Amino acid sequence: MTDQNKPSAEELIANYENIDMLVSEIEKEMQEKIESLIPPVPDHIQDRIAEIKEQYDEKLGPMLETRSSAEKSAKEAVIELGESVKGNNKHFVFSVRTSWNSKGLEGYAVVFPDVLKFQEKKPSVSIRSL
Image 1 (cartoon, rainbow, N blue to C red):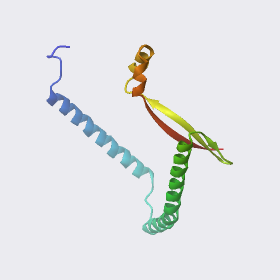
Image 2: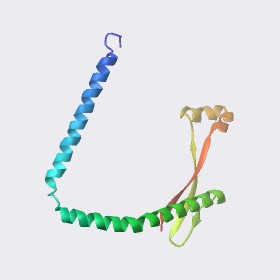
Image 3: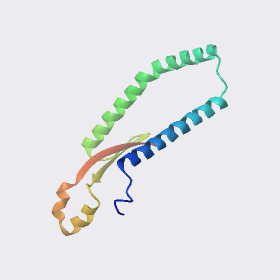
Image 4: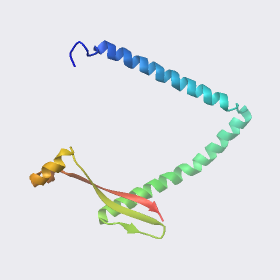
């Protein structure tokens, strides 16, 4: 491609701004569509929904935090143990994910195994319901 065929920075910016405006217009139209499909909810019902939501949020918030903390602690313990743990209704599956900076390093490592010292291994745990 020659320099004459390359768009200028100004043209790229203008094109992006046009796309951005189109996306905004699409989102506005989609929101209007949703609002036209759903009948308005009377204020007294909206107030009651807000009350109920607040009641449950007060109960659920601490419960969700406790669950999250317990799962985090369990995952850390399984990582420290270095193997999967299976209970009555949960299976904490231990795995180690290896990541490379580049896919090309895999082929390179066949010829030059010293490159393996640059691998990054990150253990992880997934929790599965049984």
